[in-house]
Image (cartoon, rainbow, N blue to C red):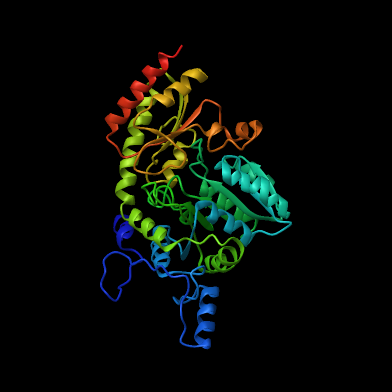
Length: 399
């Protein structure tokens, strides 16, 4: 079926009352017919085969409906949901990495992801190497027998760099088919890009962003093969991180996903218009948006994405004081971290989402002090452009 249909119907199952909306199961535990029944259910949870429930840290019917829908949208065998995007990423790390393993990660990552890898994984004996994954020859040179995982985003947060997912997966799996390629697909969403179809082994999302879509839920997920997901659920989430998603949050994510296709089309329409408008502005030094033909990753993005998304970054042709005045003068675009909601948001990565990175790490990631990141919402695009115009005017009045 078309993704617009899958976003509404995938994963739904009849319930005893015929409710159209998915019921919310606010239960922490489940009763059994017998001791043997409890043992059988526990085995089903460990292997990922079967639909029985044992304890809500291992599974919940509301969460399961969301997981089934996510698996369909990402073309995965299975999915598991978590209490946050960082819960998804950390659970993957604790499940599939061990002391002595080598992790290759792209230089351009969400700031908290970079911190998890650099500051925490290394404490447990995992060697982490950050390289620019747009350079496939550098990736080939970095791979070694101990390389257990390669981790990347595309588009990257916040620079909008594009990684060649298929090329990276081919290079990694030619070296060792057992090395997992993990892709954070948050910026694109499953509607615009499916990394598993491009050769990745696991996909993570912060569902807080486009999948939830309304800035009212914090959630994450991992999609992949049924054995990996079963092991991740039982070992990484249930036993290592406890990053369990509440049923009420799963319900909100399900509700958000139902409108994902129409929202993403509107995000893309607006971002394309605004990117073109910003390119023509004398107050803008550079626009980073993969939909622009001048973007260095445009051709790769055109191959692996259906459209180019609602995220863009800009370097303003203004001084620091005027740049801050521009941001402060925006009325529709709200100053906030996070992204992917229906409202337009703006943030200063070096001082907000990526403030934990050292200056040399910011430089390696391509994050200049002048960079601003926009999450373009679904408001009327002419209203958004008028907001940008009046903010530039206000900035120029700053002495």
